[in-house]
Image (cartoon, rainbow, N blue to C red; front, side):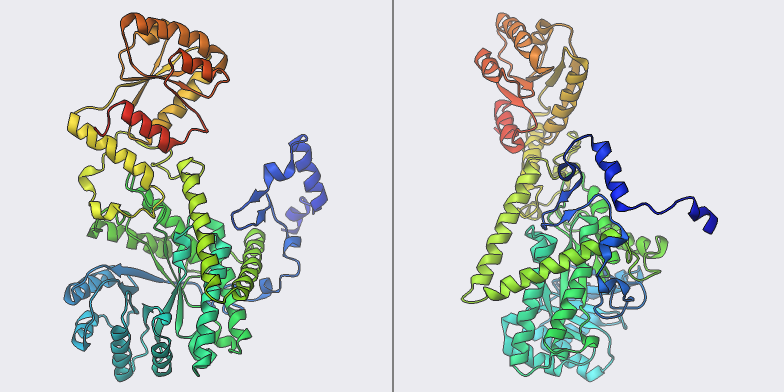
Length: 578
């Protein structure tokens, strides 16, 4: 081994940087190679050991304070399955089936628990499996507490009760809570669903946790006991490494928060629940949701979440069925049993990039926490958070609409022949928080019109002239129109007059900018001679656009086109939706 390594002598960073700059041939280094993330972090093209200089946490082991590498000395997580059933007996039956099929934790999301009998029916024959009660009322918390106190089993039970609903009740519940009962949850996932950056998710979750500890301390609850009584629930987005680092950074920062309040190290371990995000789920090409959930689950696992839930791929447009629930469950089983992601704790530990990213998020989130705390009077902090999230949401929606942020199968790479009307339940599609909603509205309108009329519009993408430009532009336009469920036919023409004679409901001419005026003049003359009023668009945004409009060109499709606005106009031109 020593002989092999000797063939690769150490290379100084300056040498690497010179080689990179030489390859750039004068291009700006930062513009080409530095990713400026929404978190305000400049992500470099590569990292080295020197980037970790001074980061003390990299020398800690999993299970050691400040828990950046996890709260346990070994790998593993609990596979959580959500049971979305109201009736207690039916919910219990579904939970037992899920547990038998591999679920390691059950979350009852809608089960009604009005009395001890309801609770007994709900948890019957579930043994020692951890249980979670969501949408929990004070009555539910009290009933679970009483049952655990009597039975003293120590089996983990938790609820998503918001402690702020009744701080006095919360303090009392904590003082009476037996071992294994975690009655309250800080729902940090709401920040992810509202488009917050990783730094903002961590910072705002920390601020919420600080408020909780401060309030409980004022009410006579010890910090250690309060810290053990709260769970942080995060949603995992698609930014793979950023999401991994997010959970690592949060654990480290939360440990410091607890210590700052006087809590002990053993009680500074953040309990983290994670689930796949909802905002990026799509109705069309829904199997892609399985792939999205897989990377998000991996981020949660590698980030060290204690419990992970993968939502069924079809949950955004109908009540999930047994098949989709099984797929969601098996996603995690494969990650655990076949991919063996549970074999070691913090498998990303030591990665120069991941450790540097973790540190950057933690530092920026801590600064954000301080800013929130400084403005936390008269509701100013809440207003500031709401305004920030509104700005983030607007920016993310704009990025999706402009197709800069890709939703595969929806705003890029869509299959215009796919049909969804026969499988969706409309109450589920009213969730406008999903980024795909504007495109799905277009698609459903087209699909409904085709179902009504029996056929779709004939759209010809007319390739003519420069071979390279015409092919690139026809492919771009086909992908663009597919976002509205519009099927296109690419045809090559040797003369512009042939395009004018084409049978179509809509024609898009695909050529190079210098050729468009001559092509349009000849083509439109032929169309006028035939009495044709077929609308004609141009692929691209040539300098001659005003001249072309004056000649009779209807519109232009190009990179800066607003897809929602232009596709809506085209649907009206084609009579779709009437």
